[in-house]
Image (cartoon, rainbow, N blue to C red; front, side):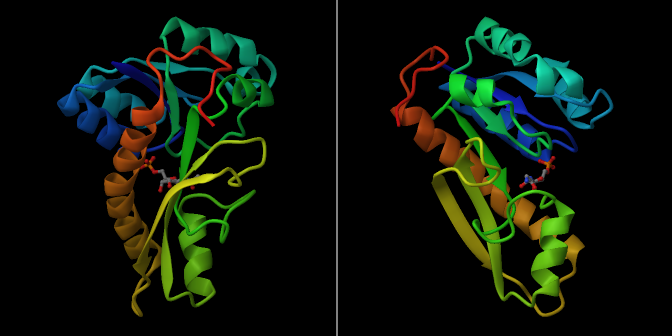
Length: 201
Ligand code: GAR
């Protein structure tokens, strides 16, 4: 059994989708959801699924990474899954979980990635640039934002009458299919019960 930690700052629709998928499969489970916001909707979604959540304020994420690592170790976490987590991950956490931490980004990285590019803003930029295709990318987390090795990437068409809202909804549908598949494929290569610092890459 692999233990997953999800990091989320907002709505948490990907977190809910992943928690449901792995609950049904039985070979992995979402052991904890960590956030930087006490009022994020992800807490309500997880309460309904009986998944524990924890909030650390931004100062802890930025200055006390060991407290977060301690919590991850306490939950025996094998894989950290970022799902709309809008805070840069401290290098100490990246180092401890290198090859064991992934993010999903709502574009075809490296396009429309980097600082300031998240959520709805990405879709607005894609439409403003007249792109005909966009997509979603699952990648390993490194110290450089949105630049880690790509695990899986899939594209969809941008329709002529798309708005940021319609595009965001279709990208979410794509993410709900793509992210659990990417996680599943990573888990197949991970030994059980990872210790921080151990990696398969
Ligand atoms: C998702 O579309 C995810 O790709 C994006 O935030 C959304 C979170 O939605 N992440 C980023 O933009 C990261 N740079 P959710 O909270 O409903 O899962």
